[in-house]
Image 1 (tube, rainbow over the protein chains, first blue to last red):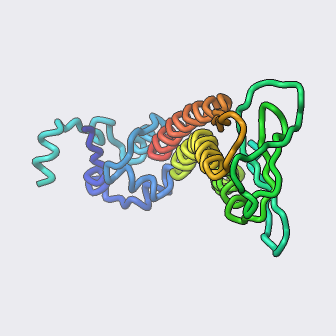
Image 2 (spheres, each protein chain N blue to C red):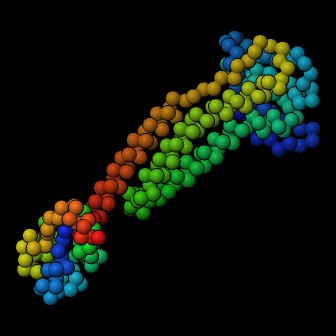
Length: 75
Length: 181
């Protein structure tokens, strides 16, 4: 699965989800869906906006985690 | 399908029960049916309405009249349910959200109802007609109440099945879109 490390990047940059949502013009509920890994897809424009605001690269936000590892971590 | 009329039984009032029969071809459009026994308590007259179609009985038996209306009652209930389902689907489309989660199931129920009406209606009519004919001491050659299944109903059910699958796919796409950030 692809894990979205948005919460980590927010902590590193000292921003809140609300501030990010206002900055990139994405609704807070949608950004929450992304943060909690419930999203099914992400637009390049959204990814660009997040990277621009948090001054990071896409690889900082997106991480591939094998299914077995993700299940072990959830336990 | 002609299966009788609604009659409220009143004292001395003759109702009309109709049953479909298959008799064969002939030139006369209407002729009387004779009985070998005595059905006077229930039947006052019986005649073939058309040689290919319907036997009509003049009867003061509410039971016979209501039995002959059984198939029509089932069809009426089914049609009411179909209208209810269609109304729900049309309402969702009017509200601008056709791909609600309930709509594919509504359409599936629509398909089953159409199929049931298409098969159950004629089958019930066949059973009802058989029961009525069994109660009549007929003096004519054996009449056969034949069910008539409408092919258009089967085609309509298949079309609705296709519609249900397409609608389900649309719902999946809508969910995908909603979860695309």
